[in-house]
Length: 241
Image 1 (cartoon, rainbow, N blue to C red):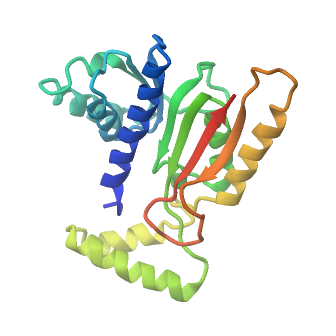
Image 2: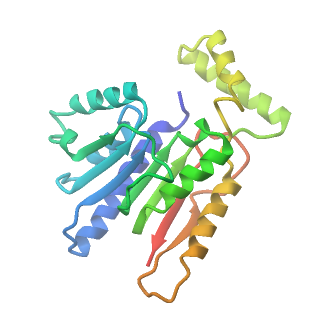
């Protein structure tokens, strides 16, 4: 239902594979730790595992507060046993929401928040984003995706017409579509890119120190951020030594 979602799954695999390759070149023996916020049905974790020639070092920690989604995710991974041996053993699903008070001090090579933030009001987006961004390890990457709609009424209506056509083709009837659109600003919220960028700038400023091992968080968008709906908006943030 989300435009371009398959491409994001491929991108997840490419990110993990690239970081794993650098780790191997540096003869690092530590496990490759991944943090997934809201794993859904587990597609992105499966994509990561498929992209690696050797998954023995892969360690995924996923936070999912929905009991139904936890079960769905475990079921999806169990179906991969023939092609991705031991994947379920390499994934730890924590059945709770990740937040500022989460007692998880580990730094992760890859952190993902795919299609989660737009389910939260802007102030909650900032709280979660800041908590997650601090978990990015030196040399690691943070990938965030979500939906946003333009403020201009004409462009907004044009996008609605396109989305309605797509959803109708996918079998979503008009009544269900109207309920989804009516949820905008109630259960669906635009991602406030400016607010998220300020979070990264604050983390970088707080990290300023003479310590040569200190890390900063560099904001580097995959493409220029626009106030338009593209199905997904992406930020790459890399913590550098």
